[in-house]
Amino acid sequence: MKHSIIHYFLFIVCFVANLVPNMVQAQEKKTYTINIKVNYALNAPGDTLSLMFGPQTVNQKIRNSFIAIVDKSGYCSLKADVEFPYGYLSIKKLKTHPRWRGDSRMLANELFWEDGDDITINIPDNAQISDYSTNTTFSGKGAEKYNTLYAVRKEQNDYNNELQTHPEKNAAYFKDPYTDTIPVDKEKIERLLHVLQKGKNVMSPFAFEVLQTDILMRDRQYVSEFLVSYCQRELKNKTQADRSFFADKVLSTFFPYPKLAVSDSAIASSLEFQTCYGRIAYLVANLKTSTPDISNIIKEIKPIGNGFKEQSMLLGAINLVGVSEKKHGLNIANNLITIPRYKLMLEKHRQLLGKNISGFVFDDPSGKKIDLGSYKGKLLLIDFWFSGCGACATYYQNIVSKVEEEFKEDKRFMVISVSCDTKKDMWLRSIANNTYSNKECVNLNTGPEGNLHPLYNYLGVYKSPYVMLVDKNGEVIVLDTPELRASTVSLAKTIRKYL
Image 1 (cartoon, helix red, strand yellow):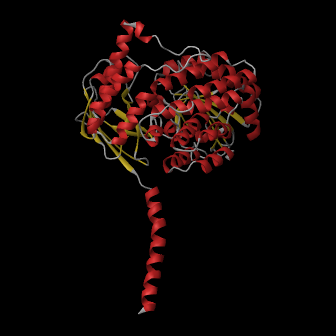
Image 2: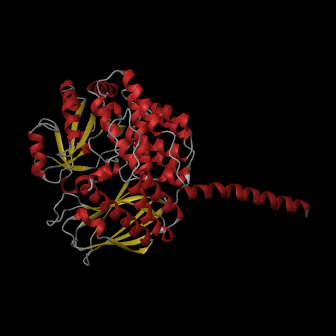
Image 3: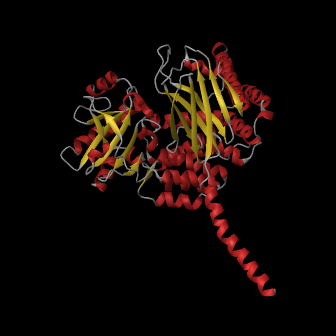
């Protein structure tokens, strides 16, 4: 009897030991389903809508896009499986409507989504799509959260309009980074929080804290954006001593973190927080070295800590710094990141490397369909852009065009220029003007899909310019890193390394 009990006990132990890893593995592979219907008065049967989802923002390399067609009733059902239980989503219309006055095709932008939400977005007939946030309503499970968010956005719009007629209200703003502190518009924050507070009981406590953080962090995010522009404009040709001094000034301005009456996990999950502090970490590393990598960024973040906020900040910076097959920085980050959410986000960035571009088809100027796989055997520099993008023009004229000239005799290397212009005549004019490309380059276009082309989702192309190196096997080896963007010297050096 005694031996039977022992054998039974050992059997249970072994069973549990085998079961636990499987449970953990199953948990790691868990997916969550986004269910959204769009009822837009200007939809027509056959129109295409895209749902874009990112764990922190849709403006990141690891976002996912999902396409759906409007049915005969004018509804579009968007159903997507994602690996994160919450994040931000946007919905974009593939084809513009003749009545739209602007060029925006966004029907919903950066909505905080949670597992369990099952909503219908109701958008009335509206000739000016940029006004959608004042007319859109939501219904279904979780709809109250979205209606509250739009009420907050309407209050923000109303407040901005008031500033136009009462400029004295806007006295405090950030203009001198050497002397100014981050301005806090208390009246605006109080008004927005007051509207959000009304919806506190109709959303989860976590969602409330995240949206509260978005409001409280917005002014800091604006300042971080200003600082990037300031550095590009004023510090480009300064000495390294001047740049390092300014980097320390930026750090002292933003740290320590502001004290907020919300959980660290909610702060770290905020779009505004990660955008702001990821940008700051990247900016400081960029000021201290001409071509920052993940290792440089970690040096700036590590003294600050390794909690939710620091790991979120690191992921925000990695989104900006890109990834390379030199995985030293990624490996260091992997050792530092312990929170499962950010561990998964890091792995998503790592998985961008080694992706193969074969099978993705684009239009050439003559209208011929070109498969990127047809360029196997060469090292490719692929430059993504669109007409009207000033940064794209600067990048091409100052860096890419010079590299083209330097390597024009090397048959092992090729530049491919990819435009997401949806109007072919605009694209062809840009090529003829040598603004973003030139006639001799391999020029390709996404066609009517624009930046919803499948390759954009596959390789995380969320901005322009966006540049990558692809090896002779068609696999991505360097993805949008500073060494590709910083200068002709750094780009040429990187190209030679892989030839």
